Amino acid sequence: MLIAAEMWPPVVPSAVLVECLIGHPGKDVQTNRFLKICDIRASLPELEARRAAKLRTDAGRGSAVDAIVVAVAEPDGVVVTGDTVDITALAANAVGVTVEAV
Image 1 (cartoon, rainbow, N blue to C red):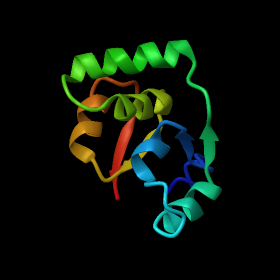
Image 2 (cartoon, rainbow, N blue to C red; image 1 turned 135 degrees about the vertical axis):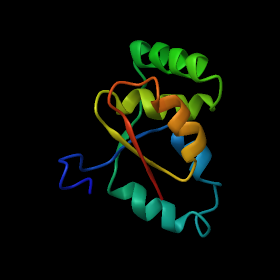
Image 3 (cartoon, one colour; image 1 turned 180 degrees about the horizontal axis):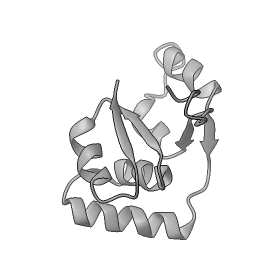
Image 4 (cartoon, rainbow, N blue to C red; image 1 turned 30 degrees about the horizontal axis):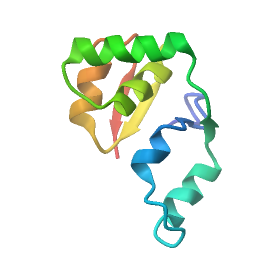
């Protein structure tokens, strides 16, 4: 899906690592394997941070990390997530962002 849509490799804001890792190499092994193929975005530009704040305020739900993920996906990106409720609420106010459940 992402390769066909020319959205490969997946872009992952570094803040996502806080939510998806636990800090134990053995328990994080599967997630780390996936992260090796991703483009980890280490910095969050001010405009994206402000956009994430606006998306979160408009949705009235979602964590700061969820809002960052949706803001980074703008415009016309895809967010692949297990948290479809919050992400979908945030994406409802985003430009062309679609949500795919894992």
